[in-house]
Every structure is written in structure tokens, then in C-alpha cells.
Image 1 (cartoon, rainbow, N blue to C red):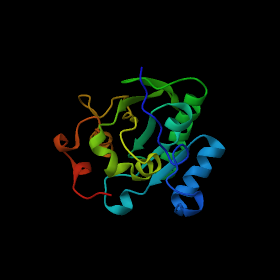
Image 2: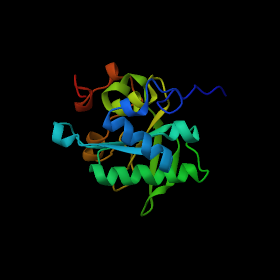
Image 3: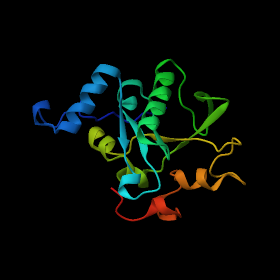
Image 4: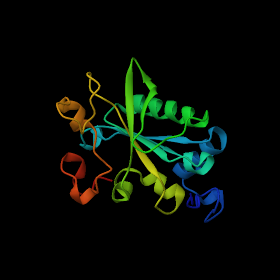
Length: 184
């Protein structure tokens, strides 16, 4: 399988690290020290249906797709993204359309789906800036409702469906509050 080059600020710097802004410096420092950075976004404060969190650096260091998680308070979401990143580093890679039982606990699985590139600039700006160019592989990790159903499944609780955008669907074909213009 041909993997795209990393092209990130660490592999192909566009300037001296002293010229990077504070965000890029922090992201790069965390990736050097921990192998990845987790970015949290307070979406609720910006009028969106929920917060989200995502990894930056998994592609750089582990050649794993980045991971995003929506609809959970930011600090909790960041912790859950971190948990999955640790599992990946331990040798449990992501697979397309995968169900995983090693992230949430309590008998709940998560589902992994690829993110369509049309969403990259809306939700993953710091990651796109770090990698300096899309495409890079990004996945979305979904949480289930109390009965274990995911947002695309019949009879799922509406709160579960509304809190998580379906980012494998191209942005222009996606209904719902996450597809509004000018989110970033």
C-alpha cells in the first residue's frame, strides 16, 4: 500500500521553529515528546451542537490515520482520543469500518469511519496546518447510544445522532446542523 508522505512541520519545516506560532510550537513539542497531540475544540461555546477533539501526529509518528471524536465535552473527548492513540501505539491499528471494544469500557464499543476530505478545513484546521497540506488520513470515532446503536442505525436515540456529524458523507451532501457554512 502506498502511503502519502507526511509533509508535516517536523519533516518538511517551512521556517525555523522560532518563527512558528504558539499553537504550532505546542503541537510540535507534544508530538516530539509524546508521539501525538490532542486538540480540543469548544464547539458548544461557538454555537455548534457539540465539542470535538482530534489527534495530530499519529500519521507523523505511527503512520496511523488521525482520530476525531465528536459530541462529548471537550476534556472527556480529549481523554478518549488519547486512549485510542495509546491502543494504536501498542500495536492495535485502526481499520476501516472497525468496531472496537478497547476504548470506552462499560461494555460499549466505538465505531471507526474515514472522514471525507471535504470536512478537513471545517473541523481539523490545526491538523491541516501542522501537516501543511491535505489529504492526510483522518478517521471519526463514534460512540453509541445506551442500547449500543450508532448514529446511522435505525432507532438510535436522537441525542446520539444529533451530537455526531456523519463525516464520511461529503460535506455538500450532509444534512444537519454540523454542515452549516463558516464553522471554523
